[in-house]
Image (tube, rainbow, N blue to C red; front, top):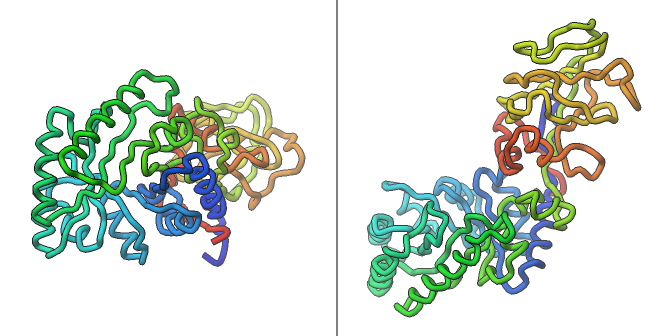
Length: 382
């Protein structure tokens, strides 16, 4: 994009992505790193961030949906790529032909990927997912022998190559949680069984961002990093971004659309949940929940404008919200066109995505991922 948008935009620092990948690789020096770019790279832009991560040494990419994976291939990205969220009838053949590793959690998926491999006339790359305790996707221990046996037979037939065995933690973002050692033990047992039955995976992996940062015993051959690649702490309990050696890549900025003086007793925004207690100046920020600004942060969301941190006055609407400037605007008078920073790295005193997460009673993952498609992304250091 040649010009910076004037209403609202998300500024993405690709150097921060690169620096974060390097920092995470240093935390897991014996393992390769997968940069997870699902959900449009957590709202940051899948293709630019994938390329930046690979430039910084990521060896793999990961997506949830096959459409996300195929879009990366269509953009010319040919790095090893795992896609894990499949439903019956999915684009298996397209994935096989594109050389995408597909995750298999059960017999139905193995059958469908075998059919696709036969139709494509090439061997499918699959990774078996073990449910070690998350209770979501993955094969239960009771069904593992059947799936492993069928996968080994398919490999002997030549329809598939089992390239990986993997699992996912439920509570790695809660240091000391009793489920962590139980899942590690279960993964070790299920992996040992698969290898005993003749499977020789290229990569074994269970570590997500929190485990990469705190559980070196979980690193195996590959660590999968999602939110941490974008510089946001995956859990406040683990530390802030700065404490973890990460730098947030996204800043959400808007231009002040209007400044006006209103009397005491003025209701502000829908429902009049905020009423001025004295004559004051209000600033209109032209971003709302259609852009991803959480309505649950009404009355609480922080914004840096005019050299001070303000807070949303009243409800966040679909396209806009208001902040109360007071009559003393602080270091400088706020005028239409001035920059308002909803969140950024925090390095200059601005709010962070974690601040908005606390204001909305959610997690920082949701804050950055929910920034909508109508918000332009502006890339720096491409």
